[in-house]
Length: 97
Image (cartoon, rainbow, N blue to C red; front, side, top):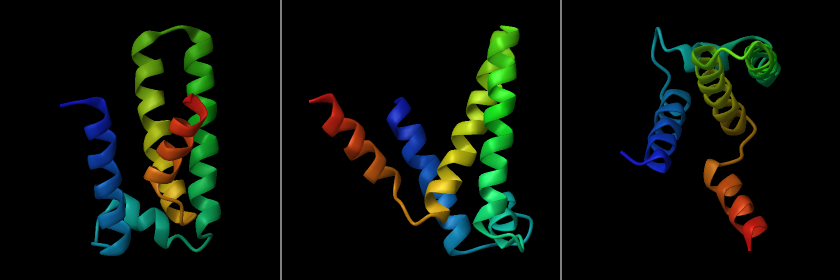
């Protein structure tokens, strides 16, 4: 599976969990938190900090794990903010030209 497809599939799962929340869903629970988007953004900050520490410590397995956590929570934050992953991809493509 191509890396773009993994991110696209992950986006679809996140969108589904937000659109049709189910009991036990981590994403649905995060979005239902009384803090709203602030809770999601706190998680992005937490995961960014953990990624920075992992990168500074130079342990490849931790860097990869924390990068995945950060990407996951970043996508949830985009969706919570009403911005699509495709919007970000289009912006990156425009900057590349």
